[in-house]
Length: 238
Image (tube, rainbow, N blue to C red; front, side):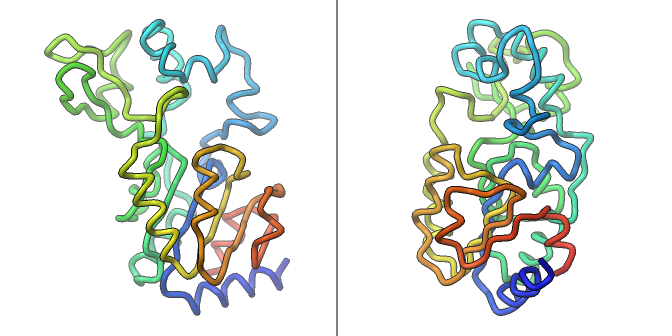
């Protein structure tokens, strides 16, 4: 393992056009639970399956139930960036890292001071009225009760991509562009099984593909370097 981490450090040191593509495993070390692991959100028992609660139709048909779950399980405001978030922000300041592409909605990359972050699935930090599109911050949503309404009477919806909803076209296109043009793509904390996000890997044409995940992924065989360990352990070495 030490040999692999040394190789990782060498690649990072030699690279000046890096993109990091991350999943839930980036934030689990901050205390935020993931979705699909043994103790993840989708394996817990609720009145409705979490996959149904976090869907477009459920939001509009059972809005109050949606917000009960959302406030209980999706509030990331109390969590802090971990070493991976912080090291990525440092690499950006050094102009080595050009962008972070994330499947997470917790906003921890921005808390760590990363500037170029493409949030494929949106963010809990942004909320909009479904009627007049007025912006509301996360504190407003998480500190309210029941269904949050705008001053115009419209329901306020978190700017997160629910099941049955498409990804934001501009964010997805920007993600494709940075991945297509980078020399080194570091993928961390994701099993690469959730589409369309995981399909982004096919746009990589660069020199170094690095996969860091505790378990194997379907793309391990095409990577230059695979490290099956925690992101925190790996990034604390750079």
